[in-house]
Length: 269
Ligand SMILES: NC(=O)C1=CN([C@@H]2O[C@H](COP(=O)(O)OP(=O)(O)OC[C@H]3O[C@@H](n4cnc5c(N)ncnc54)[C@H](O)[C@@H]3O)[C@@H](O)[C@H]2O)C=CC1
Ligand SMILES: O=C(O)CCC(=O)C(=O)O
Image (cartoon, rainbow, N blue to C red; front, side, top):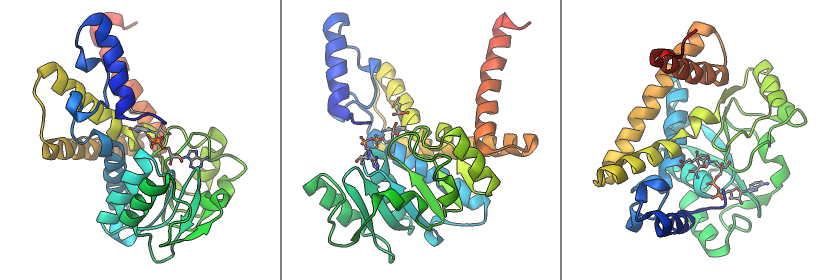
């Protein structure tokens, strides 16, 4: 958060001054300096693939759902843009400058232009300004926190009026809120899966850097879609077999993979 490809270019440059040109040492670089095409959009794109997989499982589609998004930086704006392209209706968007609302669906490309011109979402002419403090309790099908951590707490989890929470930000839901949302049958898709599109394309960037062979945009997007869709299937299977939440399932899956690799290396008891 608060960084961009320019920041990663400085890290690359500083490291390379001491160790020689080493593009694979940092990811999220500008494409002109060995970054991957598609990395900028990757986290939002991954959030959308994850949301699509979740909704499909519940017999729903992005095109018939409404969305509220907190945060309109890299992750929030790409998520909004791609949801909109798939026919989803984004009702409310907020950022550090304020919040905007349009019950008929926000013109996301217009909001992106307004954001580029003014540095925030506040005052966008296609919407009405609304209270940023009530964003998490706005009625919608899917609530997407895509800003800072710790925003869903025991103080406000009772007020959430979404059916699904897709964690695009890192740890937006604290453990108390997680419990409250579960009791209220609100499905939470955890950050460890939902926002993994970013780190996945960072992995693709690293692969491209060490191979010295850059991929085309289509390959990045389609490979990411395969990873996110397969990961959802694996996650769902664990949740079913253990009768647990998506968060618990994701942790079980991750820990089990590390444990298996550890035992295979001869570290077993
Ligand atoms: N950029 C990436 O590839 C990934 C980012 N994430 C997580 O996603 C979240 C967002 O990251 P980015 O979009 O990259 O950051 P960013 O710096 O591009 O954007 C952050 C956004 O949050 C807004 N914001 C800050 N404080 C706020 C508040 N109190 N209420 C509402 N909005 C607020 C800012 O105005 C801005 O729109 C962070 O939690 C980050 O850790 C997770 C995985 C990958
Ligand atoms: O790009 C990466 O390697 C990590 C991105 C990520 O997961 C984050 O910003 O939290």
